[in-house]
Length: 283
Length: 246
Image (cartoon, rainbow over all chains, first blue to last red; front, top):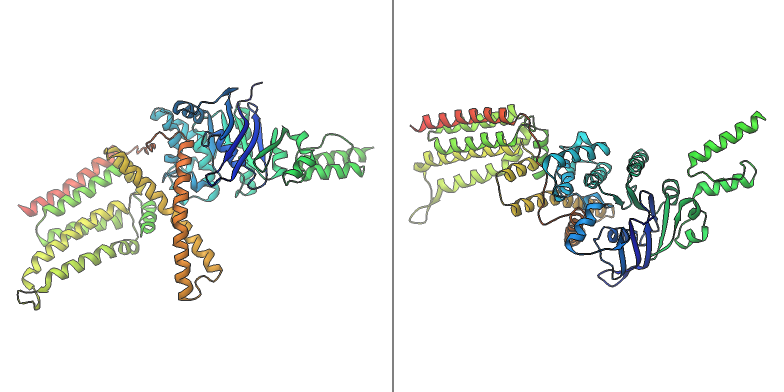
């Protein structure tokens, strides 16, 4: 299947001349969960900004639906209609004073009529659980609420591809779970979700595909179970293997668990362990 | 001061009343203050509007006084310069003859100030901006107001965080350190303003910015009834003022 978005051998240098991306290639399969995994400064944010057309490659190309992307005014408008980007720091994204106003900014730019925009704003605020806060001032919200307003602002544009820069940073555990559930609902509706993270455990637990970034390069891409098992690739990106894989391997080595596919989360491992112990006990 | 006004406006009982209704009442109050002539009537107009803000919109008296203090100071100073001044020979003297005129000006200013405070202390700025948008105020001016208003709070937070971070490392241990810390932070804020401005531009581009900041206006279901009531109350103020004039 054609990837919805693709970077091919993209180079990018920052205005001060330092390299941002070097020969970076990655393809995003449609309707899947993608995690860009890498340490700070690996180039994750730069990749996301290229995917939304905010940055233009110095070399290489961005492809949309398998075709080279046209950076003209119409092309950029069409790209941003389909690809939404949620920034890491909400205070750098929110510029309207009121929640509802800010969420309406994107859909109004799409040229929709007021009634449609109002319906989309309500649906987006519902999706992030902030319907009650619609009339509040942005600066009266907590960090987590501001982050959710940012997500609603992009959801209201109903993008095919949702890019999120470090969405879990600064959120408490229940809010992280809520956000992951929201992203799952979007994927179930066919939206392609791409997020950047430096948390290998989260990437392994959540993603269908992981793209490993190091020093401006995408050094490996692939399905999460296969990629997370490659300690050499993760090591090259300054990452350790997921803890659940290490724990599973140790339990298998000691004969506590039978050999087999490792679960994706600690909760899954606990279930497996309980099930295995119950089976042993029954015998 | 901005935060004080903002907090009062959001907490006001008239927060959800249609901004057009509140603006109409305030406008009528200002008009009445211009029309009225007698001292007693001007004082009555000011009092009615102060009471409307305190009892109607439930603005806390302490907040009202704190916000009014600065303009009252200016007013007091202006009145004093009208009453006390040098004569033709350059000698300073008290111009008692001007007292009735000065009192009228002061009372009229008080009534206009009360009308304005009643509006801003019960209407958050986003609602006022939405009203101005409906009144076809130029987009560029409104965009600037939106961005300035938002940046006011963003930069205030950045400044507060900077001061806390400096204080935690003894940056305000003495006057010399305090001056140095403040200077460093002011320099840093200039960089922050620049960075945040380009980040906001990028964020707007990412959401399809086409050159105009467009936002959805809030709906006030009771707007017609509230505007009618405000018009009635405003008409009463104007009638009182006209009666005084004639």
